[in-house]
Image (tube, rainbow, N blue to C red):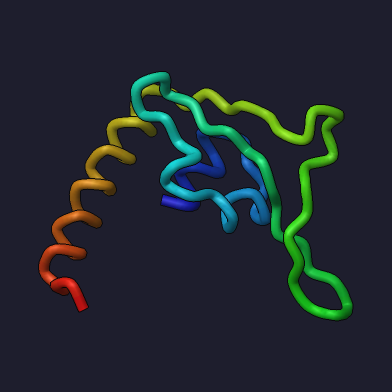
Length: 85
């Protein structure tokens, strides 16, 4: 999924690593990028995007949305199999 999201949405590695499920709206076909992960000499840190508004919206093509829907269903199945603990 990370490679597909990178190619289809043009996201950077640090943006993909901080992307959460709630950031992606499958109905509108878009994702809101609000943060990025940056490697520094002290370690990793979260940073805000460099745009003036501090965020951007990426629209995904249909094939990416279909793959994301399948991925979410598979994730839900795995979570149910693991149980509440």
